[in-house]
Image (cartoon, rainbow, N blue to C red; front, side, top):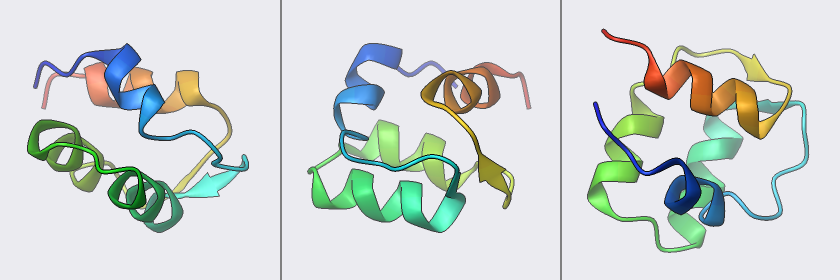
Length: 63
């Protein structure tokens, strides 16, 4: 799944790390993330993420 990492991080402004998948998805939705970004975040494994880089790394993995 190809998602623009800069666009995704704009939608995650205000997330306090470490953050759960649910917190990350909720924050992105509140910031008006598009379908592509929401689909990518909703497909994340259900765990805590300690930084924006950890989210980018996970989203960038081939599934």
